[in-house]
Image (cartoon, rainbow, N blue to C red; front, side, top):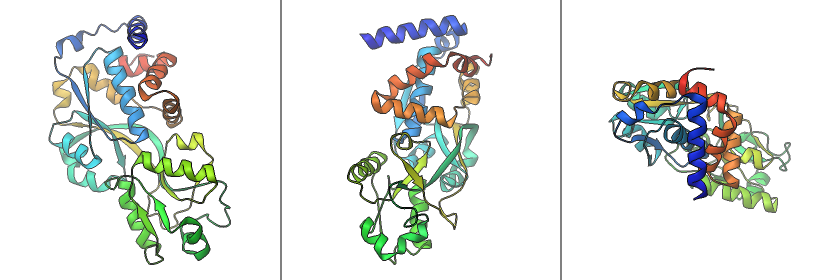
Length: 295
């Protein structure tokens, strides 16, 4: 009941602030299908966009969760309207090469993204500052010969597999552990609690950098990529099918990486849905611009 009341108040406030008539939503009688994968940054973006489309603009939204490769194919074949997690130029390069000519790129939803391997700050930097340091037998023993990864279909895992070969870690007896985003952070949490040594596949923005003191280690060969951005990609024909305001909202939607990271951290205390609603309530001018184009 409290959630329903809060949502009703939010709709009223947004209508008064933005002059939202929801006329377009009334005419569009099918759900907008958003694809997503359970990565923290993707969930934060997706739940925020869903809340704006539903609570501010009045549309029905259906979330479609699946592996990232399936998401790309879903947008390409028209089963999914759009997704907010196209990481380029390196992370999702293989997926983009397959479907880039079958989808529409609506532009970045956040920039200053980074991928790499991450260690806790309590690990001495003179012991691990670069991936090249991992071949040291003493370091390998402290790490148990393991690099903690995420879901195997992720672009970061594909790049990490390449790094294992490039830096001779397979020959040195290391194993890249496939898991999930949640599994990776759970392993990191246990390690930090016990001050154990650990290397995890990481990306930012991510809430773990707000929770723990962490650092990226150097990747001198650039195998894991450099500067990245995450974009919204839509199915072909999306612009022609939906009301103008939906398409235009998505082309304006861009969130600072630090704001996204704050939403992710807030969601750890409550939920992604509550964190998204809180962001809408605390940033009316930004939401107004995204929705209407007016400052």
